[in-house]
Length: 244
Image (tube, rainbow, N blue to C red; front, side, top):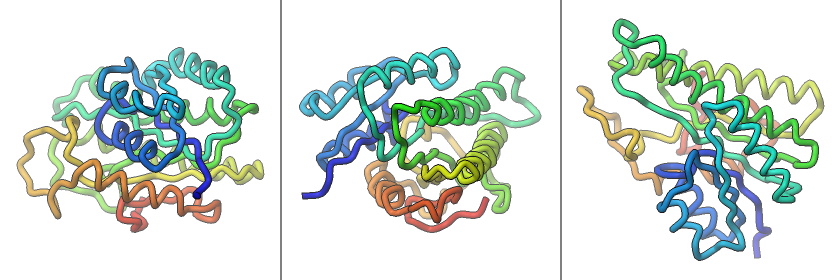
């Protein structure tokens, strides 16, 4: 029987995060799941596996909420988290540079960049808890080498994911300089059919949309496969390295 692992899914109330919880529990592992306000969908998924599931509150757009979450995490008594997936994020469409407000742009940066990085930072500062891998949910929209010029209305979202990518690369290098073995990864989940992606766009999606189930099944394999030699790298759900 495979060894039981502990996973932390930050942003698990719906969509990709909720599917991570569902599949991880189905594989017999333990899950700590967070949501801004835990609701019926997450509660329904963990109901029958309560002995392997813990639900905590965390709003990554709030520094105070992140601090409270990490304090509560330590109180659970967990000593090792094998895999962390920081999935929390927003897409308020459209977000064009010629139209978006200061607050609209700032919300994307707070939730998609600052919050995930500070959440990881606070986790890594907890000396009582060993962290194996931290995987950040990025996007092909955040690649500067493969700029998607056809994506009209994705300026704030793309900028926030590009900033996330750059910050997590620095995190990977800082950890290496300290001799720490935590693996840092960026993930592109594909064009997933979720509530967040339920928007009207004017272009065809290359290959079409995929289900959250297919995306998460692929990402689980990617996360578990990558060792410290691949820290600070960017991967698709199909296990293809993606350009920064």
